[in-house]
Amino acid sequence: MVKPGPKNLITDVAGLKVGNATDHVLRSGVTVVLCEEPATAAVQVLGGAPGTRETDLLEPHNTVRTVDAVVLSGGSAFGLDAAAGVQAGLREAGRGFAVGPYRVPIVPAAILFDLMNGGDKDWGRYPPYRELGYAALAAAADDFETGSAGAGTGALTATFKGGLGSASSVLANGFAVGALVAVNALGSATVGDTRHFWAAPFEEAAEFGGLGLPAPFPQEARVPRTKMSRRPTGMENTTIAVIATDAALSKAEAKRLAIAAHDGFARALWPAHTPLDGDLVFALATGRSGRVPAQEDFVDLCAAAASTMARAVARGVHDAKPMPGDAMASWAAR
Image (cartoon, rainbow, N blue to C red; front, side):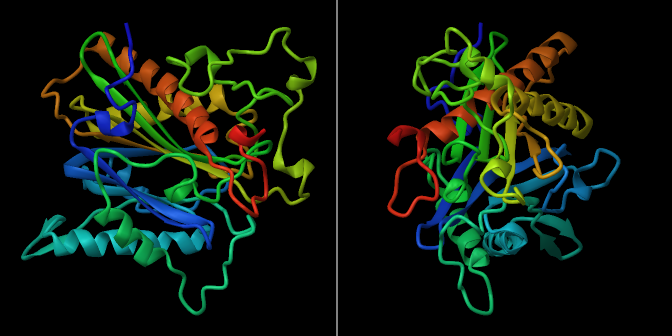
């Protein structure tokens, strides 16, 4: 039996807090996942157009095992500056990997492309993402806004506004799994021309509308809906996410959890993992449960990673808010 956690947010995983910084004039923002204590981390990139920082460090064969925070940001490559702001805040707090008398905060990051969403990107010499990252870290808490907030502020999909989504699951074996995702996909989270979500089979308690799958199933839904039908380049994409658990995992197991969570993308977005998406999942294992999962429990964790991520994707699109000047309609407004 799997059920959502008390908040149905990634912060149901003990040891994590989330902060957003949002600029609605810019139509962009930053989201930070703060590890209260350094957490074991890994990453899996399956999209063909990623923008990242510190992802090589996360490979299981490399030295540093834990991270202090993870950053999801808008702004395309400009948004990678957000990690510097988070790093500055962590340094002020005395956090970081110890190297002699110095501490170096470890802050992997990933970005999505939201430059062509109608926001004012005339920011002058330096982009604002470093300061947004610092502000997002300062806002880190157990509760946080979803939808048109943080890294999901300016996100778009092929059919509706995208957004920041989150969900959690508590497994029968007691382990918790949480997902956080900024949905800016080339493809669509909804079936054909309908408001029904591809992730409907995994929905809990009408968390994204309770519509189920359409019946009869529309034959035209087999044809992928992509941004390329509206704009020939189709380059303004990417879904970036974090999957987390309170289980005690090795880096290799964390990477396997990230791989499994990508199945949630495939369940919730059509198409996913395209050459024009930078689709990426970070994995965090806080170890707060104090338990190492047995093999059968780890299989259940991986399955929950996929289903929880699918739910988070749908919730990100569902929670997006209509705003003046929107480049696309929100799910709620249609």
